[in-house]
Length: 244
Image 1 (tube, rainbow, N blue to C red):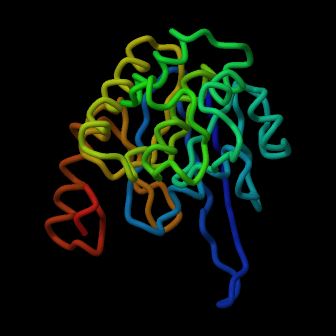
Image 2: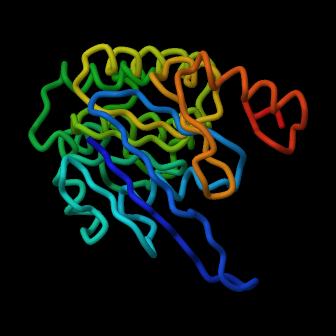
């Protein structure tokens, strides 16, 4: 179970101190599929990064299965089973895709296994296994490879920050199928930051984050109509489907 208690993140910028997250309280039960959505600048990515240890917290607690994460490094959190997919994944010059997948899995994967992970994210294994994870790959390709590594790790907590970014329509359709399959297997808790309707509608629950607060949460059938109403009434209030 993921428990977030009174979590705050404050940063200093050219305009002074800015409160990015303000006393966030959340509980996410095991093996749930949660989508965190809301307007740009509302604190969604900072919340995800704080869970992974990529954004320093200034107050509060983050508990994963009873273990406090707030005082642990990114590596320590990864060893506890927390994984994270970036909006803009890193590249690794000289690292083959097949080798990266094996490193993620913690063992040497055979050909069929590596092919399976790439197929799940809409990539043809024949075209990618022997390629370097470098600048020769597009942003969307690197994003899908990163998601494949997260699947290979089989972590009990998977966090994805806008996994749809830079991915074409056909690959995105395959990706949503993959998320559905992971959830159906009930092997991981999934947290996804997203504006995409097709991902939002897969969720057990939607958490609406805006202005550093949790504004609302609930099942898709309750929250999604509210999102649409906000979008129609004023595009500056909430972004959905990248149309605002």
